[in-house]
Amino acid sequence: MIKDVHFNVRDAERQDVRVILDLIIELAAYEKMDHLVTATEEILEKSLFRQKVAKALIAEYDGVPIGYAIYFYNFSTFTGKAGIYLEDLYVKSEFRGKGYGKALLAEVAAVASKEGCPRLEWSCLNWNKPSIEFYESLNARHMDEWRTYRLTGEDIGRLAGE
Image (cartoon, rainbow, N blue to C red; front, top):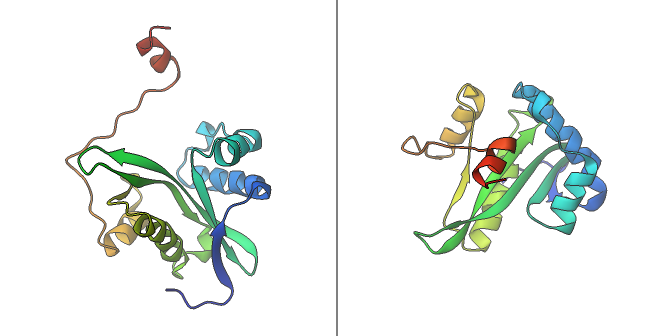
């Protein structure tokens, strides 16, 4: 897709945990949510490499990390198949607009295609116009008939009867 000999995407490895955390913090700052980041290197190492509950890709330019994607498998009862949920897609600001984000997302799409996943889904903040325009340029469809809900912390415990 992208013809830049300086750019590549690779599977994240255990030694990338610090890089991944730094990029997560950068993304959170961009989204004005850095105060919500509680991930640590230890938590990411356990989740990504021991429990393997998600997978990560690293985008590099001349061997230097410039972005990442984290995804995991979900399940559609309607199709009876696993799909992929893209949790994060992030490229450092100075590398945006060069096709690297699209190439990174294409790598996730390649995984979905190879594994026969009928869906690749993600969320985007309502105010993030550049990302919305980018996703729509790829023919991604905004699912406005669905509403995302979330329980956290004490509310999860309360519902669990704890």
